[in-house]
Image 1 (cartoon, rainbow, N blue to C red):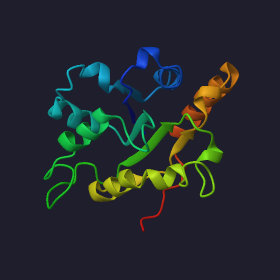
Image 2 (cartoon, helix red, strand yellow):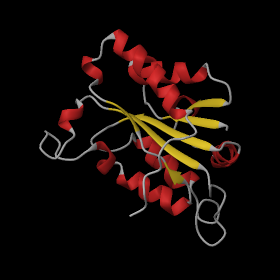
Image 3 (tube, helix red, strand yellow):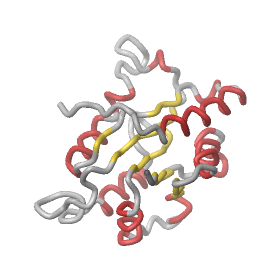
Image 4 (tube, rainbow, N blue to C red):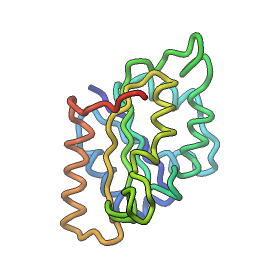
Length: 181
């Protein structure tokens, strides 16, 4: 299985967590790590190049820090421009059908913050529902997300374990898909 990791971090050089996760993925075979903010510093996305990358891989991983219960701005722009009608969805839009989509996010808050009784009142998977809906529209199999909680409090040892856990999870052929509701 060929895996494409699309890293959406506006300042990956100064990111402790997302930089380390991407570095660990880069060591793996059959994995392409694409740092989208670095590829498009002016945010002018090469749609054809992005679509070719997606077509060449079986599993797509969208890796990003969770900002205001959502994605970084360039990820939204990437979705709007790359996942086009007639290519990704619509009557002839089947280029991503039967591929897999995995969301890999990092949060500042701990897991307890993301519970019905916690600070944010919703779980991270609940807050990722728009991405799950997108997956449904483009015909991909939406995999249960990989979540790194509490990154501001994370020790170096915990970070190293999270990087190893990320690789093991993202490259696992038996990840559970979330049901379409």
